[in-house]
Length: 312
Image (cartoon, rainbow, N blue to C red; front, side):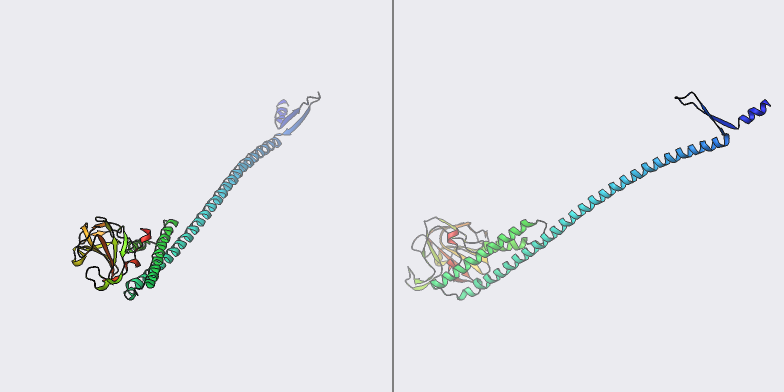
């Protein structure tokens, strides 16, 4: 009987509750089957809680990563927009630079054509009266100033954007060379003692064309090139005495007569304002002075058309 009772008791589990505020205890008896289910249930609940915690951690991390990705994407999009704005702005600047450059080139081309027609073709038949000369000098001065303004505009355009694909270096060089070759530089320091035009020659007493300007100057004074070009003569030349002739291109030549000493040679390249000789009284001359001529297609024209005496 005792063995059967013990075996029977093993089928149950007793739970004893002893409250601290009461001396009475309570005993609950659970069968082994129920206890096993209870333990399994507890394990399942704990497992579920752990899984839920892990899932929460995973979700929190995922949300954090997604937020970081969203912020990164937003930042990247903003930077791309800034880059796009910069590209568009630069493109607009390039287009503006191209337009301005083309306008300046067109202006230069048109002005060059006008000057070529006016001073290399039609000047052969220009009247030599004082009023006509004044009119021509005024027009030429305005033309040269306009070309200088165009050159300044090209320089300004170059500073707008150095990465412009429009290359107008050759155009600027052409403008500079054209302006530099024009005989606008006064060839010596001294007063004009005899102007261009018909007069009674001081030695032959003939009424004939005085084909240039005479500058009264001190013996040995500097004679400078009126414009850049190539020396095509540097020697004694008839009544001109010791003489220098410079070819400036576009059919324009300048002559410097009655020199004392020649400082350049035939074939030499000279720059505007460079000393080429000294004042003398060689050839047919009544005293030390410079005889200066400007020839257009080998026809003498009034040098005052070109000389910028006030700005030398």
